[in-house]
Image 1 (cartoon, rainbow, N blue to C red):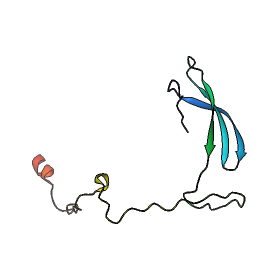
Image 2 (cartoon, one colour):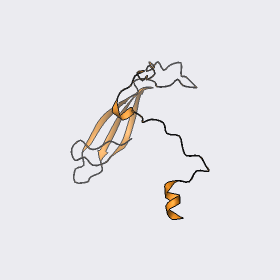
Image 3 (tube, rainbow, N blue to C red):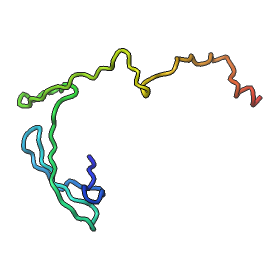
Image 4 (cartoon, one colour):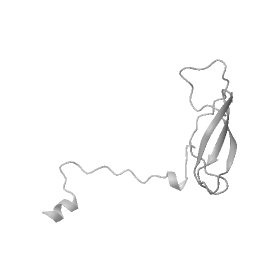
Length: 101
């Protein structure tokens, strides 16, 4: 996990952490820029599951996120695909092959 220093933007390192519960840890970080030297604390919380565990812990109660579903008529431009074009048959020459002969 990478976290930038909130003051100078440099890389930070987790120096130590403390487990509070199975889903919550307190992290203690330091900036790696010696000129900055900022030290700070952060919280790491597991909020929900994305897929069920193969070895569930009976003491861990996390809600599961609903599966992501795409609308049936997704018209978002970045998700549009052009028409399917079949690849040329193996015995057909491409125009580039003809130019080199």
